[in-house]
Structures are given as structure tokens and as C-alpha cells.
Length: 162
Image (cartoon, rainbow, N blue to C red; front, side, top):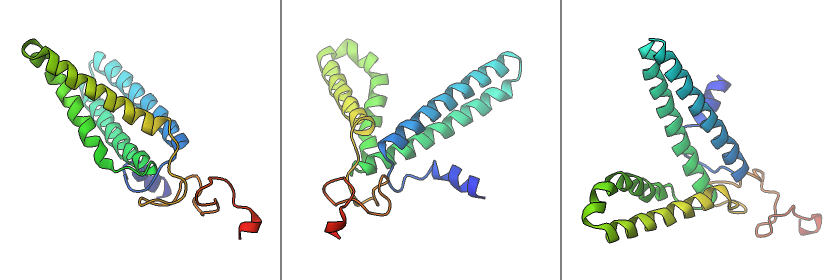
């Protein structure tokens, strides 16, 4: 039962996730996705077509899990999960950009550049910047779940402060 609860936590966007935990999880999800894809392709080439469908379903589950964990990481930076919406819109627009590029090259290039800058900002926010020190509106600090740090310092509270 505890294993199932731990597995379901991968799909829960509530709360916060520290940068180190997020990086470890991203690496696990990338390896899991790659292994699933390789296994699905290998089994499909052997004539087991149903394995390909299972692989697609597994990759979709990994993708949903990564979205939930991305939201938790944004929460650690004290940002809303709604920041995923412009990211998704830029991704969708990039698929349509090739058709628009022929008719509106400058406009399309400018919008794509804005999208690229936004995606880079989002990547830096989630992968390289520390989370908010102390509790924020999304929950307690994942690096300090019992609240023993000094509120603004990020260091262990001294006995004199107590």
C-alpha cells in the first residue's frame, strides 16, 4: 500500500519539490521513457504490435507525471502551475510555425524568439534556481520540512535565536 501511495505521489501536483529532488526525478523519468520506447520498438519489430500501444500509454503516463512534478517545482519557486499554459501554447505554435513562416517570416521569427526566451527562462527557474526559503503559499520548504531554518537566512537557526 505504501508503494502505491508513493507511486501516486508522482501524479500529485500539490506541494513543493526541491531542485535536487526534481533533477533526480527528471533523470529517472528520462531513463524510464527511453527504456520504454526502446522496449516498445524492439517488441513491435518482433511482431508484437500490442507492445507498441502499451509503450505509448506508458510514455503518456510518464509525461503526465512530469507535468505534475514540474508544477511542484514551480511551487517551490513560489510560482503558479499556470506558467505551463504559455509554455504549452508556444510548443503548439512551434508546430504550426512552418506554415506561417512562408507568409509572415519576420512575425513568426519574432514570436518564436519570444517563445525560446520564455522556455529558457522557465528552464533556468526550474533546474538552476533554489526554491523559496521557508514556507510559501504552496507549503513548507522541502529542504526544511520541520521549519528549523531562520526565516530569511536559509541557515540553521542558532540556539540564541530561540
